Image 1 (cartoon, rainbow, N blue to C red):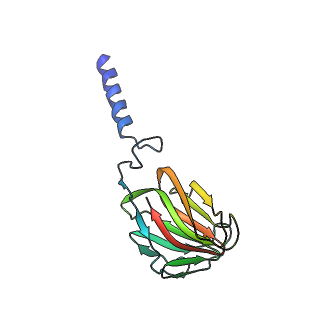
Image 2: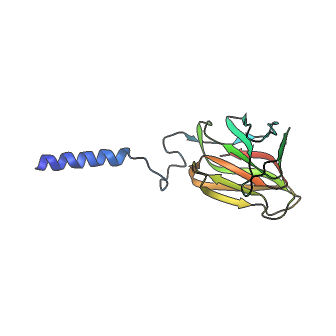
Image 3: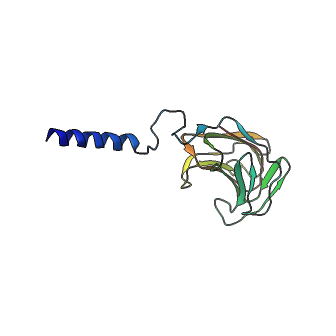
Length: 168
């Protein structure tokens, strides 16, 4: 009987040690799947203005897709910026080889306060953090962050310029 209890306790300990964990850990955004990203800069080197036709910068996949609140997708990618009017610029972190927990986005919005949003999202597109713009007609930095690694960031706008994205 004692041997069975010891064996059961050993099996339970092994299962608990090997089970995947979600959130609540304190290992600086690395869950054994990779190191934390440290300042990857996406300078928007000129992408693809066609919706749903991705391009890659620094290992991240960027694409213009339908706006967060509508089915519209209109944008223009050029050297140094992407205009979204209306559309969503989605940056997929899947092939980076590191874990992103904080993103800074340089934007200029022309539609109004709160019209542009930056959403740090998990793999189910659940918002880990979301922040709207606070200025109109002036460049600002919007920062989103989470304790857990994100799958991507979505930048939604109606008349919004995205100049640079920094991943940490």
